Image (cartoon, rainbow, N blue to C red; front, side):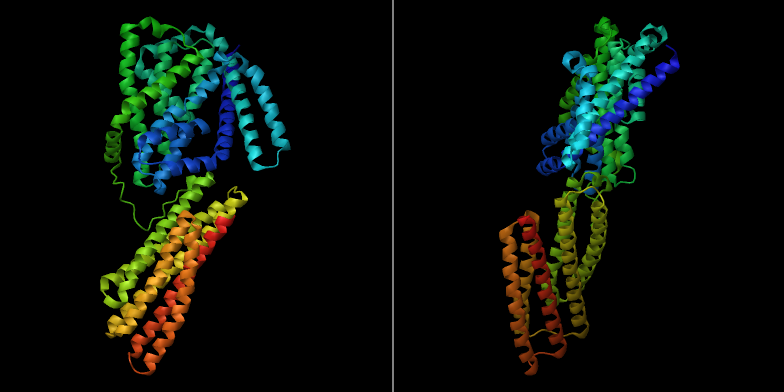
Length: 547
């Protein structure tokens, strides 16, 4: 067989393997989108939980690169800190070994041989694809079809390189890689960096091993290099992201480099000095799976206690302070749009963050009319500017999200979010109006009467409390809190009518100045409308709870 035929056969098999893996991974990711969201919500600062989560997600979506890209996106979006990211990254390295075990199953589970399983998988997948109508059913079909293509690809690669068993120079190349750890590591890193998938790179190595071409020592060093090469995808994804997201990519690279150096020294001493005969023997597909899994598990165990040190080193290299994010920056990442369940939760978190800024403004607005301090007036205007920027950015993100493949419930969630976003932004506008009233009173040196001050404080308490309850109800989808908001809004309506009537009588009796009297009435209007928007938020919550 000539070299062109070998190259074309291998390239075709590799293309089918990678394509099948991507189809299977995408199907798994789409099918597990909501589960991944739930897992993300369960994530804590406990790095061990992060390791387990990273391993689970990567085992499901069959790609450590995809997981680390998600991690970079989460950090960039502000929904995951670097401590959490470190745990997930360590777990991703363990979870990615699942693909290798699937490939090597042809050795340890003969009934799973590609020749038998792949055609059956493709047939079943195509039948489901053609007959299934629901989106979830079609995702299952993608998983099965991807699995079949993956197995056909690995078989094609193995068959294509079989003739190379009789080519001495090809074997000599692998022997030289086995005797030179640095070359072996570089070869593994380079191939993985080019195809941007350690799973695919391991699959290539296993297809060569199936043809009896790869010495044990060469395979070990190449596997180490593959772990370094897979970092390229995360590094590329961090381009254009904030500094702390870039730091997450650096952490991934540092973790794999340090692990390779530590384990590499031990392995080299063992294979080159203590037991060189083991390194010269040829490795099997199953042994590659075992070595790949052992390397990642041992590295994680060894470096887990030093993970905080790795985070600090990554911060120094990235020159980042994790708390440096500007308040007005919208912490949403376009990379998350491809996983709607997670993108929706990220957006909820950002709306709640914006809601918290408005809460700060409302608390200050309760006193600004009475103190009329310049710094409080400036604070309210600054917060309104921040909220405007956040509302615009979040709204744009939701519009982008609405163009993705969402189910009916997710489309409804987007509609609810846009309405809540609008209500919170309008409440912020009213706090700015109140700051302008305070500025006007300061310039004209006017004062409220004692009774006027007491009545406004009462109105503030009811309306601000309504907003606080509404924000809490939205965060927790709490029906009882939402119903309480409606009660408070009704009370605010009644109180506004009562206080307006009493104030007009005071004006008629010259018990307060005209200037302060106008501000009093305008403030009542603002506060009553704040309670109206709080009620709107509560009603959105009640609709979501009822769906």
